[in-house]
Length: 440
Picture 1 (spheres, rainbow, N blue to C red):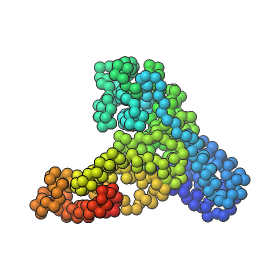
Picture 2 (picture 1 turned 90 degrees about the vertical axis):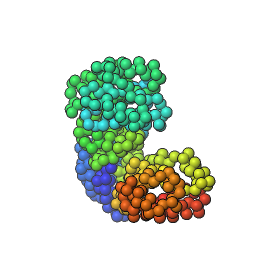
Picture 3 (picture 1 turned 30 degrees about the horizontal axis):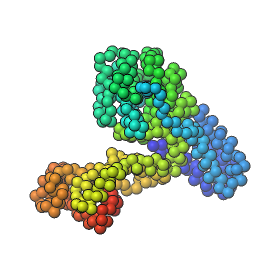
Picture 4 (picture 1 turned 90 degrees about the horizontal axis):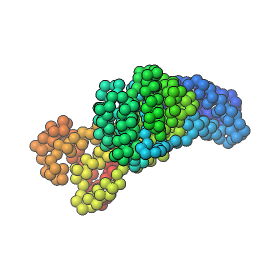
């Protein structure tokens, strides 16, 4: 995410750190490079001009030029200004009334439907609210079916809206249904268009009038750069938006949308989609994003993600089991799943300082973990509990069932034997540490 911008910004500060004493010329040269980096990242020109002017004004102050570490002072100023540019502070979602509607708007292809399910799952898991997903897109074929499938993945109810013909009918009926069944939050997936038009805006304005939503959020695709900002500006002119959700921020985004949308529209980025999994939606922290752009990582988010990946209850249960019965292939399979985490490893690496270098270094081979899971799943329950039964014919059968080779099965059995010894020596210690020790 934002790799190109981060790399350019890091070069600027590497050059500044090489200067023992900063002059106005050094700062102007650094700002010229910063300006080019931001423009290449597709940040709006007026935003770039305002940003560099503010940095220059502060950087030429006495506290920088007279400082013992002027490059660090300039870095702090740039961080502060980036944070301001991104919205200043976290703006949590706010809900009022019962039920509390959340209206998602935007053009086609920005990820509204997926975001509706992700947002519903976030609200249920993090805020403990009862959520109902409402498909109010009567234009796009299979839009209802898509939201129903996503709702199933997220474990959320989806209102069956086939009996109503228009979005306004759906809106009125959903409010009645929510009050009747006790749903606290309604999340509306609305229709989009390929471009902004009067018909779309009239429809959304009518929905807004009926629902009076607590949050009216514009969904913007971060990969479209300035197009996303122009779209947000157009929607903001016609609707009382309360904020923006950026999608696909994990992709090859240049960063222009994230860095421009607040300044151009005056609407804060509230949430960000950071992956394809249904749980990959997180609150947008401007200060943390600024730190990541400057190549300093994001340790707070790293810790939060790492903690959320660990099921402490299961870990405690596993520890008790190891002490009584020992470590078997069922335990190993559970640990491999937790390590793999549907791409969590790569996400965690992105949050560390120097993330690009870490990604280029040898990493845990997730494909190998998948193959090992397949091998374990091809074993019988008895074999998983008693690997000493593994003779040649069993190994051949397991390799065929897993679609791999006997050599790979043998390799896993050898590593498992070593792991079992290590777990035994640790007397019920954490097998995750053993996995890492064996290079898994």
